[in-house]
Length: 497
Picture (cartoon, rainbow, N blue to C red):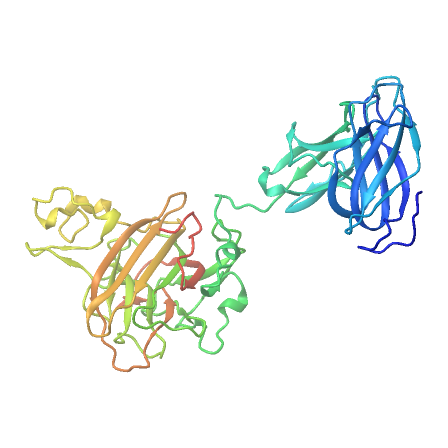
């Protein structure tokens, strides 16, 4: 070590050089390393005699830990070298002479590499650590992890050789993990592979789990309706018992989104219109006024498809209404109903009027959008098939398939109170299908009798208006996955409509 005098960062004395050494020696290259007591530049002078004759490229970065690679050397040759470092003041220190010999034979020894994690036979999920040990007689250049024969991530050039693997990017089932190490001479070796089993939670139809869809900060209500705590009536929310209520947590019937159950209503073979009870919930303390768009989605399933002609009224399925409570037919309310037990959903508001499209010939449209295309604009009923007089064409309407989990997705754009500018849009998706719009009416008028009334509550209910007590058969209705949000949230079956 050449020591001129004790040095400081920019003083008149050069830096103190120590720990000079050589590593990664091959037939044609070597790496020289050293340290300084203050930040300084890096350069190596070298040659086959003490006259040297060659200089490495100057690295002007001021550091205290130095490394310079020497390349283009001759195999089996003795080299002299010394290191140069300048401090921030430009004062240089030079180490004493030292020497090393390059290898006189080509390195043909491959590295040694072995997997250390995960263990062979392990079952993995989520994000896991993949790691390996690698050594070489000269130096390890890199380690590349491999999954099923393909590269997993980028090659790692320094120890520790480990990376994080998102197992959800691989399918569930058996997979092979290994690591390939390369040394500075280009020799390679591959570790013995380990077999692992990826087991991530999935749904039976590729549907998005409820917690994933409810992670958006715009969500104000997220209820699976698959826990007893969701159904317990507390503070105005929960299941309200009917005269013969049998609303329970149905663990045997559940949608394919990872839910453990659903809210099950039994509509008894005899009993009054509210024999099944209803589920009510406010919007998590939130309420929506003019211009404050909100979205509601939920799952529903029925045992007979709501196709029985029980009476001339119809069975309600949900009510979205104001936040102040009260009885039926309140001024701020709209309802989806199984129209005259015809087996298709439509809307009305506040018990009247019906939310329909009136045609010039006296007919009116029951549904809109994808389920109500104009077959012939010059024909009667406005050319729409899903209309009151649509005849056999009514088969194109959105319906209630029996024992089929349907996802309903409603967007409400509240207009100015008392003006015909509130818009309600609704979509439905059946099992294995994408969302299709069945309702879109932009000119609805809602007039409230109190400024305190805002959109802020939903009821889920198989309420059978005017039901006869002599109906001969029972049926079941299930609900699950209720979300109310300020933002459009994807439904279980894919992107937002």
